[in-house]
Length: 520
Image (cartoon, rainbow, N blue to C red; front, side, top):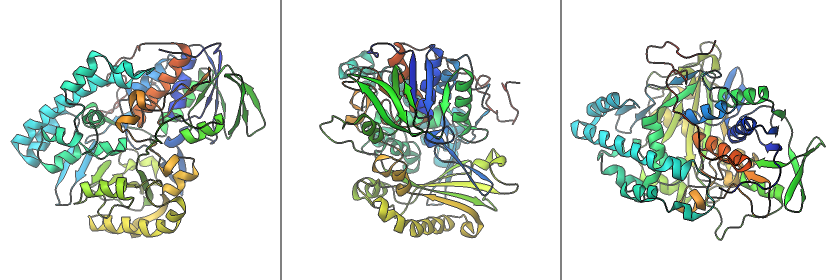
């Protein structure tokens, strides 16, 4: 593995999102001095927080999988996730509701899920699920060490026995047909393939290897931190500060001072010049390249993932048919992906993610109130409406979402909303996200692994990139890994001391509601 040349005693990390915080913890554990510069007043980046009339709203991720990667970052400084955050394992992980009126609770426990599928679709599909679960587990095992949790210096690193193992698992086929080998019910195929949209690719076009995301969602477990998803970056920042990191909040990096092939200092909006030995850059790639004063060297421009419209709604009531996470599928399926990835149109018959964080933490809303997060995938601004068009489209689209959800059973949603905030691609653009999407570059084959923008920069000896735009990619677990990989480029560390946390380690809330493993 290539690592940075020259001294790396003092590192400036630009951005206190999840990748920047993970980098910081791993660097502190390797005895580096770290200064973190963050333009906002609080940590988290996409996993931020805002207040809305007494509601505490997470701005980004609503679900956490693979908590061991967060625990690994804390462990670098002798801390632990369990000592900082109470993690609640969700049962069910999701509830899927379909246009025909049927519903399915998605459990990560194998026995519970088999019984639920037997009730939902019969014995044959239940048996197929067990084979699917085994295949997903094998896919994860084949990919994690060699293709996800690794720094690539060359595509030749792909030439490893694990590549043949992945091929034997049909990881280079298409996701939807491969899942169809195990379950034939179209509704079940949706449940185990919709995750491809996280990677920015429709299930019928996505490589089956990306079903590893379905492994994380449906096998490894889905968690919710007490206090909302923002509790995770807040805890990581606290741990970093106590371990010696110096944070500069409400501060923007305006310029990188360079001498030859090295960045020698970072200049900020406060007029400060911070000398450094190395820099980790975690903003979106366009911001990184602007700071570097260069353009990316790619033969073909990056293709970006679809975007999303999010309606944050504080309500005076809720609906018992909703779980913590509910996926409301429309009748249409393949045509919706065509609309948002090819035609550049909003979905006519949308599939929606509805999250109710007050299910497990009522303190996120005023007494007796409820918080709902409604996410509708939509085209990015490269192929769909631009930021200016969204300013006109937003009110109509918001009303159409509310009307559609009322039609699907959330009676009185519109009149129940007391506080709300609508986020559209116009807002993502204003935050500096390329193509108006918070999901960065799509995970096409040409933008994955060694073909994704590297975390090392040609011509600069002491800068590293971290975040969802570089390896390994989009998602909470992967950006945490990205931070670790960036730190390894600086420290030269190889391998991992990761251990899979037990339920005790992760302070998981078991099904009887009692809390185990909480630090005093």
